[in-house]
Length: 281
Image 1 (cartoon, one colour):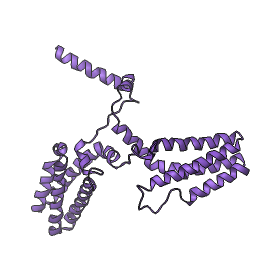
Image 2 (cartoon, one colour):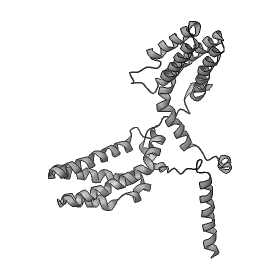
Image 3 (cartoon, helix red, strand yellow):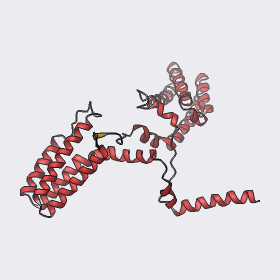
Image 4 (cartoon, one colour):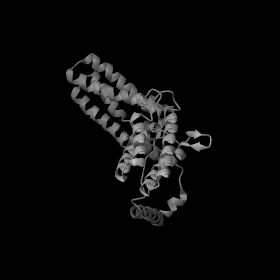
């Protein structure tokens, strides 16, 4: 009886703690570490992604040619579907047990026997197995292996990219503070520092955006800086605030909407357990 009571007590205690701290406790399923070998930078190509793209295309082709009754092309795409679905288990052995072998076998058998009603059912089951894995792992996998990692990028040997971005944020706020308090020279000096910092950031961005036709800072950002400079000298507080807001959106927020969100989430997923913080919760 004691052997049953103690585990139940522990489970109940954990459930109570999670319930009491439901705003701070979350469960996230991370993909197996072996998946990393099929993504950049460990692999030169995004092999895992290409296999997923093939599967999606092959499932669509099988369904299409089953509907149109083209046996030759149906067999062609069903053979490819079988190959690339089973390849999942070869690439990530930990996920072998998650494959619906029965469903993929039924797909192959029903195509060979031209049993199209059975094929439709098998394809539905196969789709469900894909959805289950995607629900558990697609978001975290994309965050881990496709989101950029800025933690190792340096502006200079003594300044990291993260530190540089913090400095830019402070300069934006310093412009707002000093302009509102009537300290025009300090506001202009902060704008000059911000402009230099944006240019420096652009020389770092180009390392990844080599083939991107857009440049940073672009003409819109440069024009906004020029207009803000003029407004700080002769414009009203309203003019200054509006132009600073425009600059913050086009020079900061637009990139943050893509990069900062994914980087912050990736940092959380890859961070080592913080036992002090866990005990506090």
